[in-house]
Length: 197
Image (cartoon, rainbow, N blue to C red; front, side, top):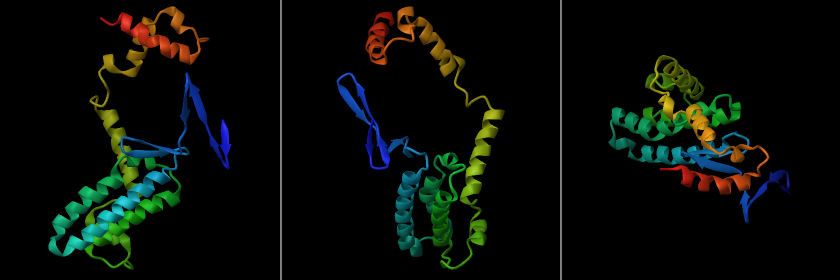
């Protein structure tokens, strides 16, 4: 482990290779940072949404209100809604950054001045505020999990089933807890190739 200023920089050694840790990582288009503040994700969204809002303002004179609202929802609002349940309980400062994007988008759609109050504008568009959208998404996912079985994988494909089956297929010599992970990793592919049909 190496300390770089106020940050802790971890270098992992595996065989003859080194793995460096990173401040943030992208998974399915969502940026996770080391403290799960999502500040990098929100900065990326802000930049992309601001660009699209500026472009929307440029073509606004040629669009009717329905088309403009459809474009705003499909291009910008969808970015704000993507994985937004992960924003639950974030600090107010981060949520405010997202709310400012939505406010700017709403004003662009209805051609409202920057000084006008945003709540009536959002209500006229039938848009929930960011915190309300996050809560709605969480409640909707909870409802779907509780009322449908389609979200569950088939029992033979679940982690619970697969982990037991695969673990029990390993020879007992590989299941001993004192093995070094690098040794186990190098032996597992050999075992898998000898047991596969």
